[in-house]
Length: 276
Figure 1 (cartoon, rainbow, N blue to C red):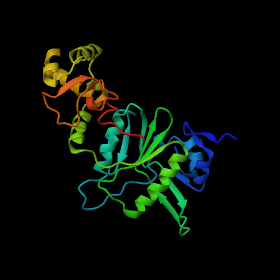
Figure 2: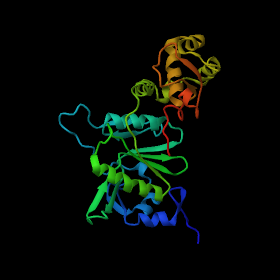
Figure 3: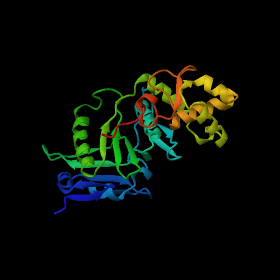
Figure 4: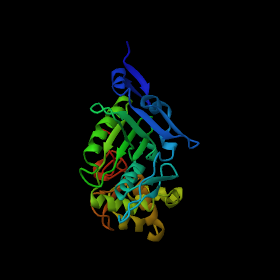
């Protein structure tokens, strides 16, 4: 008997599906009605990246940061977030060339606790769809241990549920401060309007065919006020690469896009996200 099932764009073991047979998915469908299905069925048939949040992010009085919206260069739309840590992780996913869809809190997972029989639930903060049809569910704690024991117990259940359908679940901690600052700067140039005309993009490719200081390469192409936004957009999109683990400045070395090379800081490099 074939133990592989086609769920969520990936083959999975039938035995793994059986392990999470009691897990349900609750979500607001395309017309705003709340639907509930078995997790395996929902994962295989629902485009969570197109759905609204199943529950709103809370507004907590006294906190310096509240819910907001991230404009995604990947989707051309806005993704809701509930914290600075989540916003930063959306920023990383938005640069990942494998990601084709993003959503905030689109699904609630429900299950019966094996110990006391009570119904438990968890709403992962981030949903990301990959080009191969698989997906990532993630939470973005602002510090280690955030959410306490309940979050860790939920993480175990959500991990098993994702494993069963060929997806991944991660608790993604805060970004390195320097990397986060660099990405925030480059994100200001993520809109396609900053990429410049084709002839400018071709000139940038030639100017940075070998690593050279950012300002030097920009000046060699033309007026820095016109060229630098295109350089920053190219660094965001991965057409050019730099070490984003160090502060960006006019002398930082910029070279060809380093997708897959962590030292170059390309979209799948230092600022990328491991799927695991």
